[in-house]
Image (tube, rainbow, N blue to C red):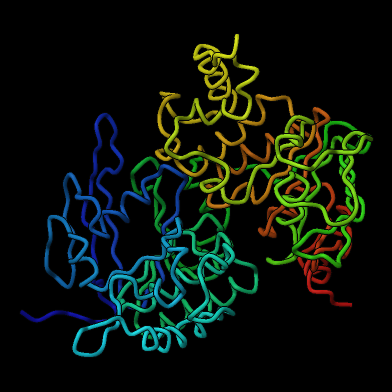
Length: 504
């Protein structure tokens, strides 16, 4: 049999793929194809079927009907081994790295390089092979770096290096820039260009539509498990993609405050922590405003939030809430005062994934839900159901595990936990990472509603469109300190970056 590897002909075809789970049709008659060297973007809201389709392509799930064609050969389903043998590599949104290994060992996990008569793992050979892969993607860490010490952004780059280490014909990137800086994102887009030039196809899954416009030659949009449409060339523009994704036009990001800005809710005065012991950060958040906090990864934004929340100690300075000193000796003390943190990584630090929606929403306030020292299941159910309805959490069962929800609905569960406790101040750290545009809009409205109700709102974000489009005022951090403040008339990507990098 002759295999057609023409660069103009698709080597991978998903033909009328459907997938049903008990009571749910996840995919219905989905067809798409990929040609060598093509950059195909796959977009859609959370729950649209993107992950299910990619699991079928990776051999993790079998389709209920349809077929997969690779190099002209039809398969009713792929096994994981067949998928890998066909040159299908994944960069997963949920990072599959092991903290107890170094970077090189993670890259070659399951494909370890061995030597000698006993076939022992050759650590030096793996590190030597990993070095050019890490340099290719602009990673600053070395092959022998312990993964436990890598930041979230560095772990994302490690996932990309792992995919490139396979002799791939198509690399599937699922939200690959969700934890990357602007500079790191630029490096990734350059790597995609190099893959394309080498004849390697890329399926690019992202909620950051600006990146899709920049790198994709063709866009396939999923909505409710079906192909809602396809865009090519000049058709790939922001409004057209959103319209296909959610079936309607989306309003502008910015909603102005309903009331004039009020008194200072949170005052951070010359605060230093272990991450930047010699820096001093001073910030004020007022009632009625959304204060955006911008800066490069490593600027100290998350570290400052964790210090305010009592996770790490204050080495210098003080924090005041509503004009009174805030006890930051522990998160429990901070929570008792009414200051809450929506963490950067909801799966690791915002949720207990194996617990139910109900348990997650209730766990931070069990004292209020208890009678005579016993937690009331009726009170827990009532609170969870109230938050499910108020936040539009898409689930019919509040006892469903948090792990089974989409990213947007998981974030709403984290929000529901805190909003049920009458917050005075809420810090949102990367509030929409890995969330679709529809869910983003809902979270922005929730943030604005909190601010309009007089709650202090601080939003840390690496998404430039988000920080400019949602904030009433922006402070920019660099090396643990505030390098400048911008009012709305001065908002621009250029001005934010100038302050972030310390340019004159």
